[in-house]
Amino acid sequence: METGIGSVDGPKGAPSGAVACPATFPASSPTFIGSPEATLGRHLARRLVQIGVGDVFAVPGDFNLTLLDHLIAEPRLRLVGCCNELNAGYAADGYARARGVGACAVTFTVGGLSVLNAIAGAYSENLPLICIVGGPNSNDYGTNRVLHHTIGLPDFSQELRCFTPVTCYQAVVNNLEDAHEQIDKAISTALKESKPVYISVSCNLPGVPHPTFSRDPVPYFLAPRMSNQMGLEAAVEATVAFLDKAVKPVMVAGPKLRVAKAGAAFAELADASGYAVATMPSAKGLVAETLPRFIGTYWGAVSTAFCSEIVESSDAYLFAGPIFNDYSSVGYSFLLKKEKAVIVQPDRVTVGNGPAFGCIMMKDFLGELSKRLKKNTTAYENYKRIWVPEGQPPESEPGEPLRVNVLFKHVQKMLTGDSAVIAETGDSWFNCQKLKLPDGCGYEFQMQYGSIGWSVGALLGYAQGARDKRVIACIGDGSFQVTAQDVSTMLRCEQNSIIFLINNGGYTIEVEIHDGPYNVIKNWNYTGLVDAIHNGEGKCWTAKVTCEEELTAAIETATVEKKDCLCFIEVVAHKDDTSKELLEWGSRVCAANSRPPNPQ
Image (cartoon, rainbow, N blue to C red; front, side):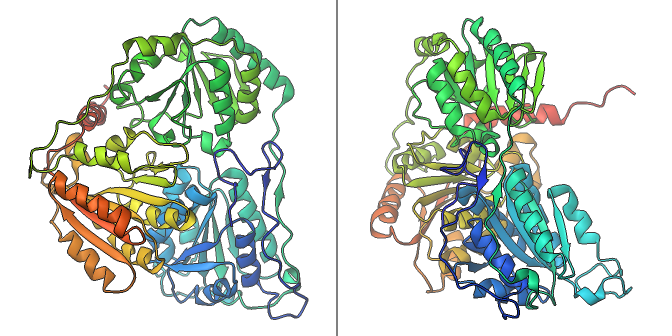
């Protein structure tokens, strides 16, 4: 079931800013008091279906087994068993990117603390994710008993305390009287805040009937957050005065466009204003790259060619939903000035050094601004004057060792509106940024948290949530070694993604920040490993390529003869074969990391 809850633009047909849940899921027979289906487990399962979750990524453990029985019993919900909890969390993250909301289910403490890293990543990326944990028997709370799967203390709150900083709401369900209220509040808070939530359910409660679960849950309708109209008008007036006096203003999309559901409003403003348009790297895929005045990725010193020169030389720039951190600012080396910037956050606008306006929704603000700004194409005209067409990598000699830039030349040719790209943390960040995305082509990577290994689980979840797309993942060998096991789950789910495993013998991104022997890893027989995981069950095809001719043949096979298979292509590259952007970025991040202490 599709839902727009977490999309860039929000659900179709809902009032501006509203979060409405689909009310068209298959009807079921009403449940009555005393019915064996009037249970907590049934209520939770149907709530998940109602908000658009069709797949829950799970790892069984004795505290969540009964709950998993009830999730499996819901015909519109599929339980996807993962190899470990970390990957289950990453998969829920990828699924939330594709479908708007995701869910995972693990067991108490040993499972919860294992999935915690993935939940923290989803929190950093503003993804609504329901993390469900099977908790201790309700009779054990307050008894001073020591339970297994804990750290050996009679205090069961350790897991809860760990989840508190990385979730926006926590529910510990250990009685039936308020279970429905806690579950509903947790899920609705995840949708409203676009952040993960934690729900712990005592292991003896999922199957117990209770009158509060006697009916199907009423569909959510979450009231939209409204802009303060006086503040909105004042912010628009101040911004129009600020931008209209500029000679060559530009606009830049940031990653919080997703949580603000303001992608369409941003595109409308881009069209109306005539400004040159760029995206921050973590916003790639949130704005169509086919916009008439799109100039590429703004990433400071490692921007798309000619993009940073236009942005940083502008006398005014509007940033919509930016996140400025050491990575996105290339070690704090941006050449931006606060007094030239309009910063639009999901609910706040700051014009230059001030004034600032609160209680203003980004979607409303961009929409109103598009009606008022004078059209100004000067920055884009300047861009066209200095722009020089990109070169292509030099032609490879027959049998010449494969270069990474040649690989991405071929990846570019593979992309269509029916594709999506998952870029792992590492040099794939920089190489994938240079891909030109056709309309409809998805693109995801985890820049704020940057957890290596994220892409394997995220690929599993994204592909499960976007069955209409063939997903292409670019993963380094170091990252793959962290989470490789769940290729097996992709096979069980009959996915047909294409994985390019870039084997260059180590943690290349770390090498360019600070090298050492710890960045060299043990080489694996990667295709042999995937063949062993395949084990004749499901559709899988592997290839190892070392030159362009072999790569071309492998892509031809993967996209034609093996288009229904999970395709794993190991690309052997030289350990020092990196993008020029990584070399520049790594040296600047290294300089930022190694700043000496301030005088005491």
